[in-house]
Image 1 (spheres, one colour):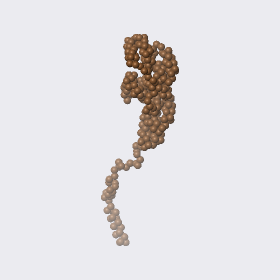
Image 2 (image 1 turned 135 degrees about the horizontal axis):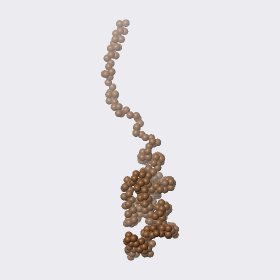
Image 3 (image 1 turned 45 degrees about the horizontal axis):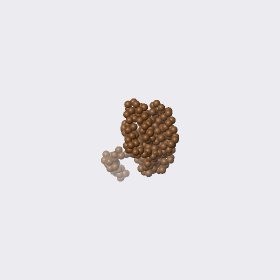
Image 4 (image 1 turned 135 degrees about the vertical axis):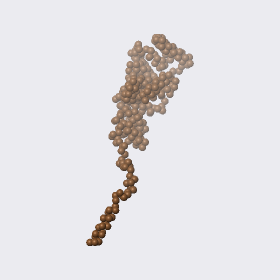
Amino acid sequence: MRKLLVLLALMLAACGSQSRDDYVDDVWDTYDPSLDRPTYDERYVPPSRMNADQLVERAMGAERDQRDDQARVDYHAAFRRDRWHTQANRRYQDLMLRNGLFDTVWQEYLDLWQTEPARGDAFWFHLRPMLLKRAEQPMPLERASKLDDDQLARINELTAESAEKAQAGDRAGALAAIDSALEIADLPELHRVRIELRRADDYEALLAEYAERAEENPASGDNLYLHARVLAYRDVPAALEMLRGGWILDVPGWWLRFGIGEFTRELGDGQLDAALEGDQGAQRSAQGWYATAEAFLTACKEVRPKAPETLEQLGWITTQRNRLE
């Protein structure tokens, strides 16, 4: 019994000597609660909850990883959030063209433009694949009239005379000078001045005249432009559609291409006020019209670097696009 009591006393003494305050654990003494995070990234957003910008970033990452099929899925998901997202449409088109899917992307954007024909961005993305496809091809041109120095000098003299008389209010005299110049050479730029001088008084007869001229030579893009130029004074979208059809068929003519640039610039101007007031749809549409105009007019400038019509239009477009940015 005595031995049992002694043993019990020793055990109680041992327990009493163990104090929690004296307990040391190196792991817990160095613990940082800020490091206690879950194993997943709390910033992760599932694709179903991503907005268009996030989906475009995701698609770009897939492209960098050479996963083009996944990128295509992500771009389409971005379209479901925002069908007119500029970067998504541009990068998606580049992806499709890089993979040899021109016919698919062409039909897709033709259908899209036909559902929204008044949108400049729809028109731009409709034509963009063809513009990229033809980028390295020379512009098909009509055969230029051969004029000697005396003829050119006389035409310039008559053109200047016409401009002076028009500015002075003498429309009849201005028209007579241009008609005299046309007797020397049947040039589209002279017809363009003639159309401007006559359109107010004789629109219907003028339209019929240039429609017949275009029908007589359907392979002339310059004649098609003159017909469209008259029509555009009443209906710019219809005139643009006329030239779009000729361009898709690759009808030759510098003025045909200039006309597409000219008319899309006019349509961009028509949406400029709403765009500057903060209407996002109008802003994107105007930017699309201006992008189309810039592309065609830049191509025209490369062929005729000193054409005053082209330089003037491009300067205007640059100014307006800067205002929209």
